[in-house]
Structure formats: structure tokens, C-alpha cells
Length: 242
Image 1: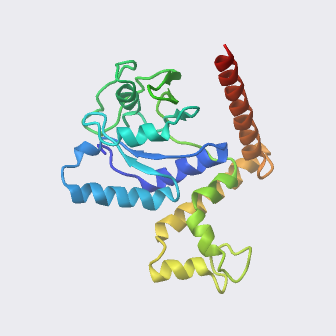
Image 2 (image 1 turned 90 degrees about the horizontal axis):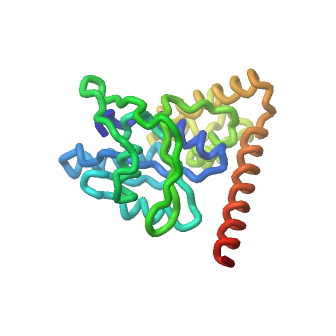
């Protein structure tokens, strides 16, 4: 919260996570910086608007707010990866989850609320009570290479688009567009539709540059995720037998 909330960045990150085959969750960190309850509620509502169906958790490593809810997401057998810019409080949050100073942290710069890349490598930690978490360096921007994750990130827009007159409606100037009608009626944020269009154009351009057929990047990522889950289950079974 020291750097503010950026809904379009949330949408982009969720789209990239969905394309990888992982399940996203949005953590609004350093929520204790907002003193007024109404300010916290407003931030939570804005984050939910960008998160779609992904859960949104307000957390504070300093006060402990939201840590129990976060631990419930980290069920046994699940591994979470912290993704976000430097200074977002990822390593501080890992320390709070583990109850120990396992990761070095650093104050953000006071003049622009940004942090340095204090965490230089990726490391996996087992969380007491179940699950694991991977901490890593800050990510300035996630690039998109497949539109499949975008569709999942904007499921609310897709649901509205089901009412369009044409199945291939691009929601620009086609007659009978339910999405544009929703924007006009105020039931869909125009900025959210603009974000969707931007990410779709970016994903198509990136895939074309790399020569990746549509859907192939997501299929590869999901196959890898399935293989890792099978490996994890096999290791758990072997451990239980021991």
C-alpha cells in the first residue's frame, strides 16, 4: 500500500498466472498503512474488481492481519510463489508466515515507495502447518505469450460477451455488443475492458514474434504443472511408506 493499488497490474499478473496453470491469489500487502476502515474497504473492493474470481486477502506482516487466511490457502501439498515488484513486502511476508527471519529485508525508498532487489535468488520454505512458499526477486513486469490466461482472468467480461450478437465479437463497433452495452450501463468498468484489449493485443504480438501457435504456451505450462504434482504425490507416498 505504500506504492498504491494498480488494478491493471493485478489483471496482467493474474492473466500470466492463469496461463501458467497455477491458481492466483491477490495479496494487498502493508494494509496497516491505511488507518481508516473505509479506506481499507475501498482498496479491497477495487482489488476485487481487478481480481475477478481470484481470492483477495488484505495482509500485514507487522500486525498479523490476514496471515491466518493466507495460511488456509497454503494447504498441505500446495506450493505458493510470491510474485510482485521489489518493495511489495514478499520476503517480509515469508518471514511472518514462518515465524523467523529467514529472508533479509530492506526498507523501501522513501522518495518513490520502491524497493531494491534485496532477494537475489529463489528459495523454497516449508510453512508450519502445511504447504510451502517460494520467495524470489521482484518482478517489474510479466510478459504474456498466450491468450488463454487472459480469458480466464477476465471471466466476468467473457460471461457478458456470451450475450453478444456475434460469437466472434471484438467489442469495438459490432452491432448487438453486450460488452459495450454493459460499459454504457455502468455495470462493467471501461478501464477493465481497455485492459483486456491491451493484453490481448500484446499476447498476439508476442506469440507472433516467437512463432508460438495460440494455446501452445499454456498447454506446455499445464503439462509441466501436472508432472510436478505427480512427482510431489509420489514423493509424499514414498515418505509415508518410510
